[in-house]
Image 1 (cartoon, rainbow over the protein chains, first blue to last red):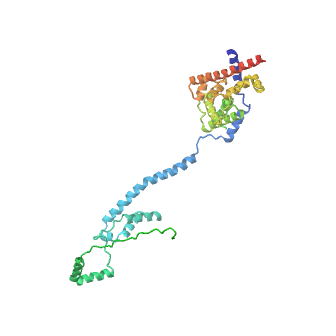
Image 2 (cartoon, each protein chain N blue to C red):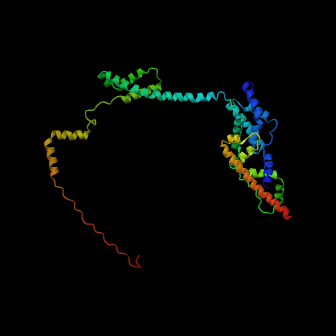
Image 3 (cartoon, helix red, strand yellow):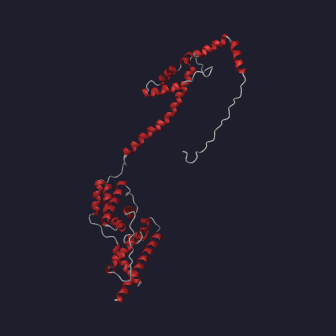
Length: 187
Length: 173
């Protein structure tokens, strides 16, 4: 039985073997390669450049930005330190001028950005009184004049007003009458 | 294709297209699909220039063709019903099938799990021994031998039951 099974199996598996291909298979393969196939000797050079150029530009921008910031800040502060107090008093306008002289060939957009940066970096003037006093209103001026003219009277009036005792408030007890429910039949 | 390289590639196609077809057919079991797999195999080799300097071109091509053929297999193959007679009394169709052992066994092979069917199908190619099949499938040679043995064992068991039933039916009449 074993022998018979093996024989049957072997013959069936031999028939299971793949058939021969069509005789023109190689020719068809070659034809399709001629039609579609292009060897990748230079695998898409344009693709490499389209990725590489923007990447390099971005890297360059990232590398130059901090350097530009560092250069702008000390320049404004040192030039300001070197200027006379009169120039310092003139303030942002001069700083604007100095900064713009540094980059005469810059574009308008960049010029605006630079001047804005210089203005931002300008130290604010130091105030002796903070917050800055504002001018008195007419009412306040009248009150001040009254106090200045009659200082004794004003002081006396203030003292008298403070002498008056503060009496405790008394509130009468609140009385709420009971509500009687209506009798049956009354509505 | 005018250069020397192209002429070499053309020679490679002429030399190995039959073999590549047979490998692809062993997996796909369909001439049309196998031819497509052959075209794709050679086209990829040509485009990527990976065919130059191959040491064992048969092994290389067989591996490439096998990969492409496996990719072309339907992802979820419907489970093919194993050939198993439902009752002891065979139907006329079953009798007809039993009469054609080759067709019966081929349907049994097709019903095997892919991990067993693929090595068995490749082993039917005279050009491939178990070491080469192992190289194509990316498996150890021992594993391939074990799978071949298991596949044959399964087929023989089914065949034995089929033969026994055929004999019983003959005596019953």
